[in-house]
Amino acid sequence: MARVRFAPSPTGYLHIGSARTALFNWVYARSSGGKFLLRIEDTDIARSEERFLEEIVTDLKWLGINWDEPPLRQSKRFDVYRSSAESLVKSGKAYREGDAYIFKMPEGRTIEIDDMIHGKVSFNTNDIKDQVMIKSDGSPAYNFCCVVDDAHLGITHIIRGDDHLSNTPKQILFYEALGLPVPKFGHMPLIMGADGAKLSKRHGGVSVEEYKAEGYLPEALVNYLLLLGWSPGGDREIITLDEAVKIFDIKNMTGVQAKFDLQKLRWINGEYLARKSGKDLLPMVKKIMADSGNTNLASDEVLIRLIDLYKIRIKTLAEFITATDHFFGDVYSIDEKGVEKHLKSAENKSILNHFAGLLEHMDDFSHAKLEEACRTMAEDKGLKAGQIIHPTRVAISGKTTGAGLFEMMEILGKPKVIERMRRAGS
RNA sequence: GUCCCCAUCGUCUAGUCUGGCCUAGGACAUCAGAUUUUCAUUCUGACGACUGGGGUUCGAAUCCCCAUGGGGACGCCA
Image (tube, rainbow, N blue to C red):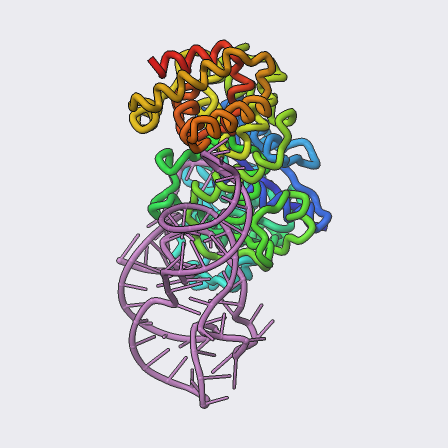
């Protein structure tokens, strides 16, 4: 049975690239009926912090990733690494230099890897230096404790980033020297920024937290990450984790570095947003509104109506806030070009005032009745409905885009609508 | 500098392993049109690629070599 792992180092937030690594390992385990484990690489005690670990755990769960056994912490196993290193010194494969333990690199050997993604890759040991196993301060070096623990955990398949490809021959040598079975490796290409450079803040964010805060749904982020380096086949673009588990085959992963495309992520997020109900989205919207300082400005009922109206017009939850700001008070963003185009002429002002006058006599302020009133007025005055709709939209929302006008009016309510129309018409 | 990985539309990719079905398919983005007598959704269409050069072969996006380009690694970081 396959056993795979994700081994984060709690020295910072969960990087989007690490999240992808975790994701593919998880999918590999679930699709093959194997186990997915977590190992905490906290050997750098000075830089490791509990709060980072908590954030990583939270983010993994948020993405839908769970693990089958309690996480293993490397900081608790320094004695194990030391005795392993000691055994290699005894057998003559390593030597000591002060308090450090160093592995003697054999000469002239070719190490061949049959990578699950790249196929055959080979290295010559002449290109590799002797490797530190235990540092002078007693802490283990990455490549060494990685091997000791992967063997200890019975890891059978290691799926990780291409940045580890050149670590692999070193690790294979450790497995051999220690007399341990060598697992299968699969190195997936790194994600680059849109400009081909290392992924950074200006590409839209590097941490899972940033995407969460921006209002991306975990399903959408997962879906997008899954499409980077793997193809579900056919013309599929939208795929859930569960469906991916059913059809995943590591053979379909490409060895080609991919650029992170925020536009496509946004599109996918929009797809998921549109498919959710306002009720399902409510907690997330409330959270993101609270985080940006908007609290208790509308009832849940009104919020749900707004979400249902706007979910097909936004790509992230954060956009909901700016798109609907005119519902939450009298200070909201104004599209100056829209004002210029629709509210400046005397004719439009007169149309606004006339329409407002009609509205004042309405008791039933439902969108159906409002639309009826608008259409009737257009007919009476020989106008096209658009000539009433556009100025009204800008007058009550400050925007040229948004939900259907009459639904907007209904939710805003008679007093606000008329007040804003009168102000724009004066 | 040395070693390693990679190379199809602007981007993600299908096709490459098992050469002919590829006048290279899909999606995002962009542009245009239709629908919606408002916004968006939706629909239709357009634009748009096999990095270059040598081979091998009846035939190459697919196999081989070289060049170029991109990325990674060469830490007592992980």
